[in-house]
Amino acid sequence: MDGKIKVTPSVRYSDEELEEFKALILDKLEQARANLAMLNENIAGGENSTDDTAPTFKVLEEGYSVSQKEENAKLAARTEKYIQSLEFALMRIENKTYGICRATGKLIPKERLRCVPTTTICLDAKMKENKKK
Image (cartoon, rainbow, N blue to C red):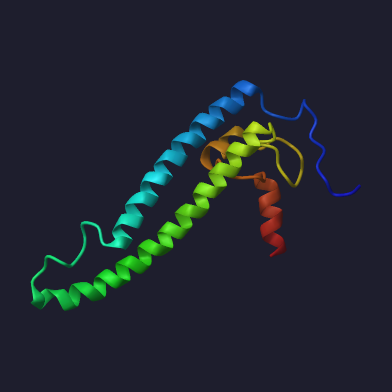
């Protein structure tokens, strides 16, 4: 065996089920993009800027502001990665390979896909993968 998963038409979710997952992913994608826009606004200095504070507090607030901007930048990077994962999940839906475990070739349970819509691996395979690390 060459290690590639052979996807047969009988081992996939139906078009109706894929549409349900697509709606879920599009909703999460919209939320993630809104969160990213808010984070980017805060990084740029949005409404939490120290421009309007008294000079006495400005020094303290600037230290906090830098720390907060760094944290927001980390969250923004994580959110961008999540958005990319959601977009890849949409591509798998279009290819009708969404929900197929890349390790076993079996269907990932719907409950797992609803909780982690970006997953490409079933829980059993994930646990085996983690044990190897």
